[in-house]
Length: 159
Image (cartoon, rainbow, N blue to C red; front, top):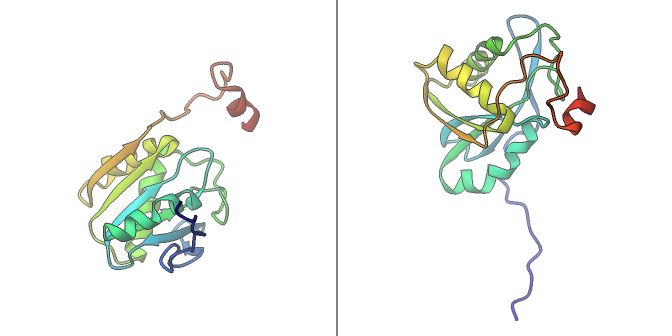
């Protein structure tokens, strides 16, 4: 019988801890990086409800595959400034400012669940820089919050 090994975190699990980027509109976006610092850059769009920390799930595989995961929080989540009047179409400019700050030209995107609309919007608006996107269990944007009856009870509670 093989003994169970205690999981020991790899040193690359989290390359940075929380970092903050000042945006042109005065707000702040929090982000973390995972995987290989010199790897192919991939911007991660976390699901809803979630945060940038969701990307920890990709860290070991990203390192092994030579991928650098850049995982920003959306406005109002964790260390990111709340922007109550923001729209989905505002997100691509946030991503553009983040990758500019990190001196990244072209990048790929990975989106989970509620992050899918953000990846699609980014690819549409700054597609010249987005080489490809991968969507896992993509969810549509919630655009009309006046009719909450069609939402899952947990989502109604959170809204």
